[in-house]
Amino acid sequence: MRKFIVNVGLVCVCACTGCDQSEEIRHYRAAKPATQAEPAKRAVEPSTAERPPAEAHQSATNAADQRMLAAIVMHADQAWFFKSLGPTSQLEPQVDTFRLLLKSVRFTAGKPQWDLPDGWRQKGESGMRYATLEFGPVENPVELTVIPLPIPPGDRAAYVLSNVNRWRQQLNLSPIAATELDQQSEELELDGATGVVVDLAGN
Image (cartoon, rainbow, N blue to C red):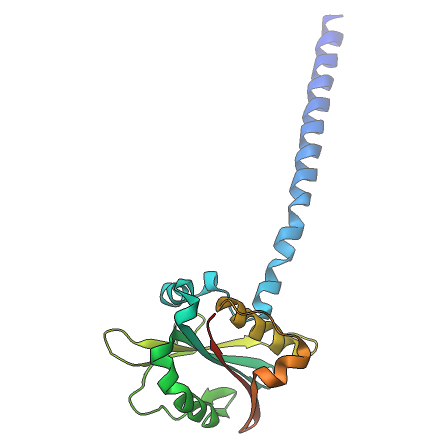
């Protein structure tokens, strides 16, 4: 009789343990959808949180005093993001120089090359950055980053628009519709590539 009671107790313990384990499995599976969404973050140019501290600090300053010169250069299945964000007083004199830089872009073995403007300085690869260009005072320069990302499947015009609206948001500007993209940007035909350029002033 005692053996029967002990066996019944063991069965109850195992049954309870089994219930706890099945509950843990259900809880674990419920968390999976969050990890499956992660790759979508790379469909657009990196957000402020993903950028190096210096650029994140620039985005956090007063948007009304900021200006952005940016371009998406699409070559094969890669999008190359050229972007500079900084004080209007420092970027405004560089507008024409920025366009000349972009017009000089050509590709060799899938990698971009360009003519470095007079007075600008160039650094090599770092993290996600293919290159970092600097201009202005050496002790407090403004950066122009060059970052490559794969172009996702789908409508390329929609891809460009999503990035332009992301940039506009960084400067407290309202998003634009697809029908407005031509008026709010400039398209450049480069050597074997197409570039879309924007010049944005903060609000």
